Image (cartoon, rainbow, N blue to C red):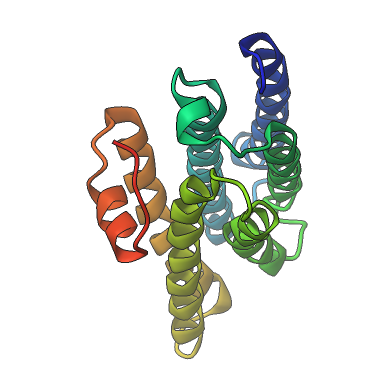
Length: 214
């Protein structure tokens, strides 16, 4: 079982990666907005939208990770609720996830192929599937299933929205529309994590027929 001291130092690594990723994203966008030569307005708007979706998603994943580790490994009743679990496995999967978020930050700049940003976003949304399958023998899979279902559903909506919009609109506009499901899911997830009012979580938990946390 992970001690509070170990978890504090381990989670600090997540925080460092998140901080560096945010710095990378800001450096990729802000200089284009305030220093000449200025980019076309359309390019700047597209970059700002990607920056905003990045900041919202990385905040969501960081808060979600904090909630998961507190519930699964650090709460007073975690031993009785989740007797079979692996801190090392969860930490390593989380570490790779946040490193992928750092790579995602690099793709925000206008000099990177625009579709790369979308592809990595979709990979991030599907990442929980690999985590869930690797840890399905542990009791903490019940917590993982919730995020896996939510992110999987978000991925499907985002992909369908993008593919449909691409039939009539420009690729950039279609990608922006594809961000909307991700934005809505992230806003709901962050709000429920902060307020501890799990309306959507409970509905989703019932939908996938899994026990939900109180």
